[in-house]
Length: 204
Image (cartoon, rainbow, N blue to C red; front, side, top):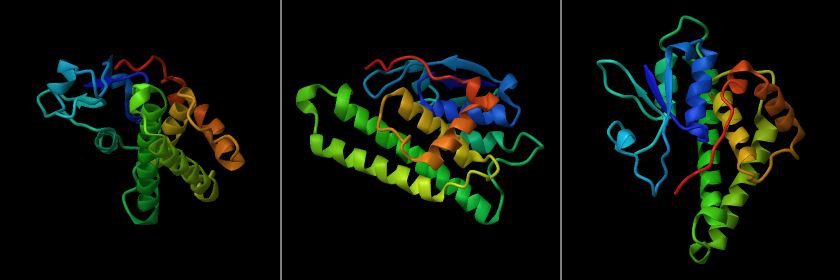
């Protein structure tokens, strides 16, 4: 199988970290693709009408996208403990945390547009302030609710890759939340994270 990837995408990294965690990474051919809302990549568009990575290409089958669906698919391919719990409150906690992490990353992307990527005369400071407020509120919620002793699941993977990307892009820091910081620093030492470092710049 082939994974269309981007070395500076928190979403693509989430899928690859998940693959490492379930012991599937060595069965993937990872190919980096540059994409952005203003930069059309024809190879990516040929597989995903949204023009985004990650995309999982399977021989003789339809491609799978986005990261949520790729992770769900990979979780069906191994015999170990499922990283997307199958039932009960553990399932809903994992999926809720995944959702929070995904939207946190999207909010960070929005803040980058208003702070540096959009031409200066087109920036909207009130929108940037709104994004920043949502980020800080999310960090506060995570500080209160994150269980540092919980078993690794898809929500934790999504959160760790998002927080790593927030730091990589010099977005508002979570490091004044001690509980969240301790959890993140421990998670970042996992082999799956160390094997998938972020790198590169966005080209618009």
